[in-house]
Structure formats: structure tokens, C-alpha cells
Image 1 (cartoon, rainbow, N blue to C red):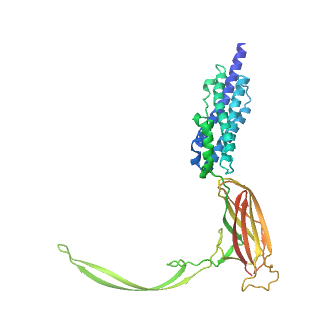
Image 2: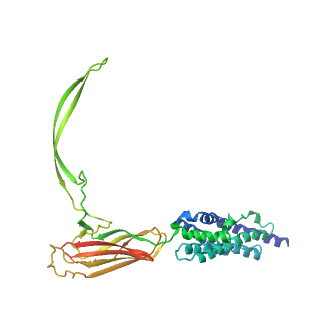
Image 3: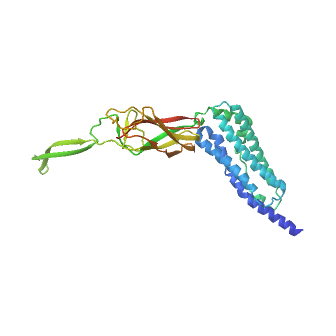
Length: 376
């Protein structure tokens, strides 16, 4: 009997030692929960979402890790009690995430959000109480005294129904927490590279920043001045003066571009080629990930420019259109990504209007328009 009791006690101690790190891991999530409850309106959307994800993913992971413990608990009731604690906290974290999403969605779902938050509070209070009961259930000598205390609610009054309802209502009114998807087109470049951009606005800034070659001739004359101070030796100072005549020649080079969006009404000129393709850099500048992001490019042939070789066979008819696109999937909030679109056919001596567009999710589509001319 003693051998049997000793083996059971050793097994209990082993189980307690195995779950102790899980309790520590669970406790490490409590400060994040406290911070998002106290300072959510000041955190900003990105930080708030980060804390919610940390708590919800972390608690779900700990709950799963308990299921992976192969040792038997001291009693089935004790094992079930700890599992209930971890499951309740994971469920509460999920409910809180959904409640915050509803409250800040701008879709007038405050009542539903408040109900979810109140339910989360119920689960959190129950989990803290259940953990205290769990420790009392462990048999003497099992090492229960080495298990850390675990209370997620540092300020229980903030998790009462009335306080949670007010909190949820205030979240919905906080401008910094309003959710929105946003996309931007940071840069556009062409291959082959643009040789020059014509029609750029002209700005005169003295002195000129262009390259300058200068020829100078200098004549120097020297005069001597004598100064006498009372009580001091006389001194003489030699002052040199010079006059310079300068002639300048200024040369201005063509403007080239890479990874930028040329200004409206300008014309980007590329070398003679049969195909062009677009490289673009796009970004999600909202506080939510944008799903289904797509970058597209459309070429529309324009009427021949003055002086162009209109006799070249195969010139496209004005209005002829070709399009390509590339899917990027989901773009995380604040993330940027470059994309190379498939090639599009062009004709030498032809002019085009190129429109590059990024779209996705509920974000407003953003476009850049470039007038393009292919040299003949």
C-alpha cells in the first residue's frame, strides 16, 4: 500500500511540475489584458489589435498545451478543473476580440458588442475563482504549494457588467480606434526604363543647379597701410584686393526617373521596344489588413503625337486597350509589397495612356495615370 501511495504521490508531483510552466505562461498574458482594458482608447487601433491577438492566441495555445500533457492528474476532477480555467480564459479572450471588433466597426452593433464583453467578464471571473478552487483540490504533498497564484482580473470592478457596457460604448466613440482599410500606390516604374520625362513643370532657383563650366581671369593689386597705436610699436598691414571676371556656360541634361509616379500632363518616353511591363510598390495604410489586393495596369492607345511617324505600319487605333493584373492576396496593415506585372505589347512611335490601379477589400481603389510614348 505504501508503495502504491508513494507512486501516486510521485505521479501527482510530476503532473503539477508539468503544468506549472503552463500557469506561468497563462499569467504572462494578464498584463496585456489589463492594459487593453485600462488604456484601449489611448492605445490606437494597431496596438489594441496586437494586445487582443496576444491574449486570444496565447490563451488558446496554453489550453492546447494542457491537452498535450500525457501524465495523469492527481484526480480526474483536478485535471478537469484546470482545463476549465484555461478554456474559460481562451473563450473570454475570443469574446473580447469580437466585442471590440463590433464596437469599432461603425455598424451600430454596440448592444451586441456589450453583450459579448459582459459574457467575457463572466468567464474571466469564473476562471479566477475556479483556479483557486483547483489548487485546493490538489492532494497534500503533490507540490501544489509550488504552483503560482493565477488571477487575470487585476481590477475586478472594471469587469462588472455595467463597467463593461460603458467601456464598449466609449470604444465605439473613439476616433483613434475606428477601423478602416486603406491602400496606396507608393511607386511606379517601367521596364524598359524611362529615358526622359517631357513636360515637367519648370522652376527657376538661383543659383542654377545644372552643370557649369567657368573660365576666370584675375587681377591682383597690393597696397600697404601703416597703423600707429599710442604706447605700442608701429605695425604695418598689407591688404590684397582682387577683381575677377567670370564667364559661364550652363548645360542642362535630360530628366530620368525610377520608382516614382510622374506628374500629370507629363510624357514618359521609353526606348523603341515591343513590350513594356510595370513594377509597382503598394502599401496598406489603414489599420486593418486588406484582403484580395490586386494590382492592374491598362494601356489605352492615344492619337499619334505631332511629329510622330504616322506612316509606320501597325500603329494601334486610338482607344485600343490591353490590360494585365496581378493578385497579391492579403496585405497586412502597414505592410508594403512590390509587384512586377506581366508584359504588355506596344508599338514603336505610338503613344498610350497607362493607368496603374491597386484595389482590394473595402478600401478605395487608388490609381496613377502615366502618359507614355514609345520612341520610333
